[in-house]
Length: 469
Image 1 (cartoon, rainbow, N blue to C red):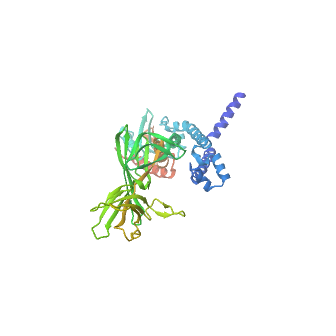
Image 2: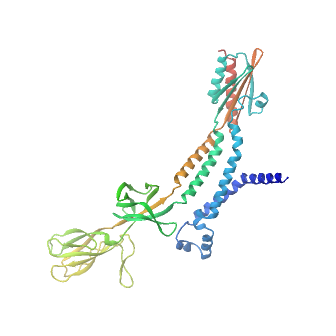
Image 3: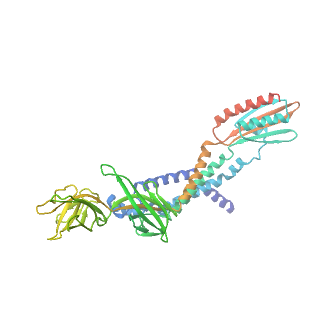
């Protein structure tokens, strides 16, 4: 009696695990979780959450793991239960599928044939081997691969198509499980970013999900960064030429742009952003025209460098570059942004004789600095900022596993929706001088279409039986 109770308890628990109700409940819960993960920013800085939510709401979200939902213990537990449910349902279906795939019933009785979806009978007189071959040819043309089995009293034909269709259930479930495994493996990776100036090399990634950084097993160098703008000064396209170095040796060079990353040793580098760096590394184009009418010249100078004015012993130095010039309440100069909305340079003029002096030259206000007693007109013609490229760095060791899972699931879905397991039996029994024949068939789906094709098959078989060889 105790044994019966144990078996009853196990059976009850098993029925709960494989129930469709549990599957639907888990799918609803996972859908709700995915919505929360979409609405609530994931792994954002604390300041972002405090700006979006009240303090009590932020504390609740953090304690429940909603700010890093896909690593929360309860989310992983939910995925684990869902995996157990899928595995149990798969195992539960194995005996039925094994029976469907078995060919042990190639010969069936007329009583069983009548229980099939379709059943019809006819008689004919010719029982020659040539006639059997004709029947087999018809079945193979209309149904699929055909098997023949005969004895002294009976000849049986069995034809089927889509024999692997019952595997759709298993492949779909297996694909989902493999995807879940891939996602879990992916949690061992990381997401971060690298900021590189032209010519700069780094091998450390600043992490986004957590504070800190991680060292990658090679170095990445930005050889060149190029950006193109529309007429309204909006960025049109930007690219970075990157080189991978291992032990100081160049092993790979690629120009990346948005949606075309560099992939090396399981790590992807995406072109995600750009910006201008310190103005000290930039270059400017300055036009210097002597006020006495002597022809002037243009000079491309790095900020901080000194250049000689042609035809004279005078020199000038570019002391400072401000991309978006402004003055604060205390009279200090600063740049309101990194964009060249109001670029200005501070120039120190170093005459061969006399005192040096300083002046500001504005690209948009060329006459601002002109004053009496000065020898030169300085025109700020252009500047060439030092851009940095912003690279999003992603390492996901589970991505290939996820792709394999997607492939398996796609095959399963294709088998489920576009194939069916069709089986047809043709049994010939000698009855005196004539031969009695019955045809039966069944399918796993799309029964009405199968019934129509079965009628066509029967008419062709009947015609074949009555025709002369």
